[in-house]
Image (cartoon, rainbow, N blue to C red; front, top):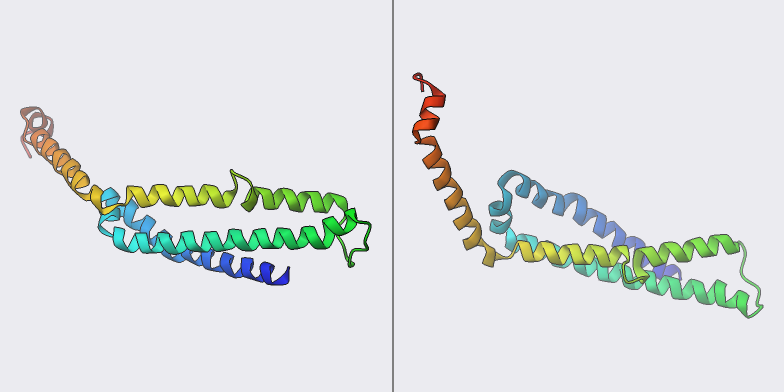
Length: 162
């Protein structure tokens, strides 16, 4: 159980680093340069997303191992009428711990699963194949802006000083 716990903590440390130091920088690129910027840095982003997804898989595996070890040492031992090493959690603590593990990693809609799904969506939206569509969209938008700026209505709004 202690190895699974330490493994989970190590993976969480790496996940927090990837979120706080790496993915936030990509978020800044997206905020500053939009889709075009994200698609341009997509090769790097994809590497970071793959590393993040792998860390998430490892975290889930460690949490599953931890859950199995706790079940064996506490839950099943109590059910068999065996003594449990002190200090042991009471029934309420055990139920809350199981609920937290279910939400975090074990259920179909676990946080790890939701995060993995969000990573896949981001990977798809940052695919290099999208670059021609993003450039085309930017080109169309720029052409529309140019025609508006050259229009008599815009010129009239700007006044004679423009």
